[in-house]
Image 1 (cartoon, rainbow over the protein chains, first blue to last red):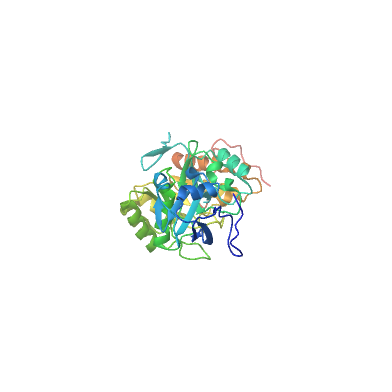
Image 2: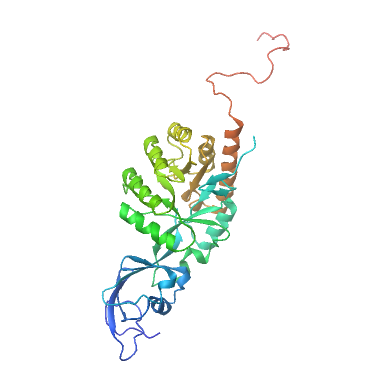
Length: 88
Length: 262
């Protein structure tokens, strides 16, 4: 994974190679630049998250685990990655 | 009297104690306390993955869903829409289709918004969820939640995290008397005696988190709660004596020697 060169305000690494298309998304409430058209599964891989350990909401639609490969990340997408934490 | 096991929504549980997983100092203490409590049903919350921190903070890295029945909650939700969203996210994790529904109406007391809770319950039941609804100690709301198809109704003992114990045992008993579904008292227990008194009201179970997690020794308190819940249940089944505001001697009054004069 390479470090983001997107400047201030961009959280984390984008891992976008040369010649790829950049898109801006809102991931867990934070703006990020990622590779356009990448699958949500690839995004999880880039974030080092196990698909079985998180639930993905893509533009307010919950993605089934077997839909992670088909779902593509595009400009302006809002993605929420949630999991179970301690609670009462 | 022989007790039957707790059955909620067709699932049988040997323990009448349900515990939360929040507010522990660390995960190993949380797991040790839950094991000590001997609870089978364990609540969890749905939250964003913190992308800047350890990816291991998810609770499934620490609690095995084959060892515990994990019950997702809608804690922190103040609207019907949010509660539905969190419930569906929790279900999408693929463990089960159960939800501990709570819709909060007030930040200071964390008392439930009972109208919103009822509306959310109706929607979630229609969507195939098994709903365990956190509610006030209010009979009418409890009856309506039962009518809505909730598998359990969970009136509070007192406000969440307050540790005040059962503030209105009469209302709790009346809810238990009037509903068919299991009644789980959820929130407000502070220490073992509170858990015992709660179970003595005849309810089917008790759900707690802070009382164990915020104890100086959570594992010790978890053990105490396990005993207290069983003690309260057995006392209820055994049927307590009638309370009187006058003493009645335990030893025979007959056969006493002549009283000496002072």
